[in-house]
Image 1 (cartoon, rainbow, N blue to C red):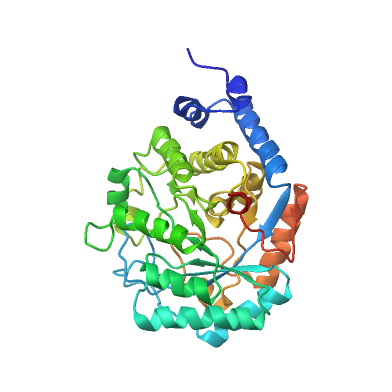
Image 2: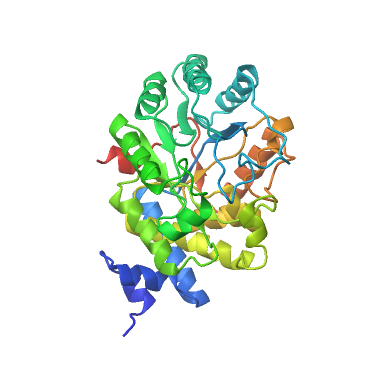
Length: 361
């Protein structure tokens, strides 16, 4: 017999079938109970606080050819760019002066010496400019353990590497089966990051065709098993100039359903993992104008307002209809401040907002 949702939410421990039942909730009242419980747990373990990471998308050049991604190597329609160090440092200075206290550097994947050296120098320069006060998250793909170590020693301390899906069939559908895209390598990189000493982040795409509620629960159990400190996950949005964007155009779930699943993932992850950092991602807002606030109310505590130079923002498109690409950094900040305050959470300026899960180990 299935349990009542309310009684599952009042448990301290959860079985896998409990989590699947939560993921399958259809009833609107039950859904509200789920989000309310997740917000309670967020309030108790990490506070009603929101931390910003100023996101700088520094380049859309990529050696990978992932089947879903708009900046994949073989997409000839993309106008490629790489921000110069001066351009990046201009964004860094803005983030520092606006007291975000933390930034994230993201780019297409490269593993060549020039890129590795560039990032190392950049991290050192960011630390110098901010007198060591800016926290640095990297999201720069799979690298060797030695590279991760160099960047850590230069001053980066958090790293986000999304696993995308722990279901191997789905993972292999998302990635071409060449020697550049294996699940084992991706997982090993997460282990390297842990060994080096980073706060380790990962995440998945939510609402993919043929992805089941059990697959999503398995993704959350993977976060637990890997002792992950921070989660960045969002609903799948297709990019039309990709193999899967074409194949899935007419079979992808409704926007409403993908947003709902995205919010359930945030809520159930918060309920199970308590003190991790969870981002309300731009993809939620891409499908629902209020998606990010809903994410915060479902248990997220991190936002990543983009601080990419305006002339490059529209070129860094992993998916179609990305919101805010014409907004200045000032407007993005103003809008976000307003929205966070409207739900009653406090924006914490001047603090790194490190993962309490990492600190509590």
